Image 1 (tube, rainbow, N blue to C red):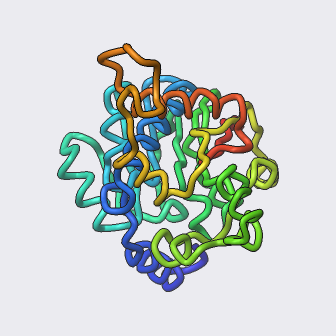
Image 2 (image 1 turned 180 degrees about the horizontal axis):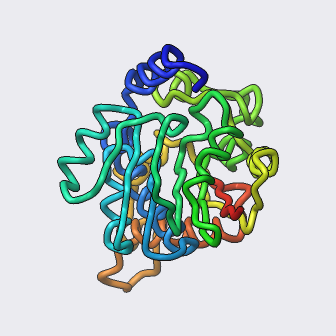
Length: 264
């Protein structure tokens, strides 16, 4: 941030948006969150983690099972309060990432679902990279404007273009922009950093509200179109989500979330 007043305005903006994983589309976001964690852990390094923004700490709690040292950062006082209650032994900082000051450097830095929210994503990447160890990794997740459900919606006429921001994106989630793999990599390179690998998380045919309804109300038992007859004790909902994650690895350009792993 350029000055104290701008920081106050931006922090107040971050506090005003009501989105949370447990409040909106909770069933789908539960599965998506799980596979976001799985993907992070598949690409992470070392024993220390800087998680920013950490939100209400739900993902941080899952990361805490794998790292010896975790520090969480979030600009929202509501989120930080919830995270501290959930994880009283974890160090949390209430701060914009742009204003964060830490002497410590980390093996892994996670930047999940933040670049779409901020004023200057390139400078934010530069700032975040200062907290990486020289041989560390930064993992960045952003929503994919080219997800298959958005391509379908353009053809159907419910979106003018894949990168159109919906009222939900703007007013509930607080998004400022959308991303493709190419635009994400471009910003990483403009920040003077290197893309080590890239990928996608969760192949998504339907919109988020439709996915949530489907997971809550779909016919998941054998004999109703899912699974083979006679197979018992299979959780087909879990298997569907696992399959969506695995096929997303093969088709990252169609996934809900795209990511890059970054080195200095």
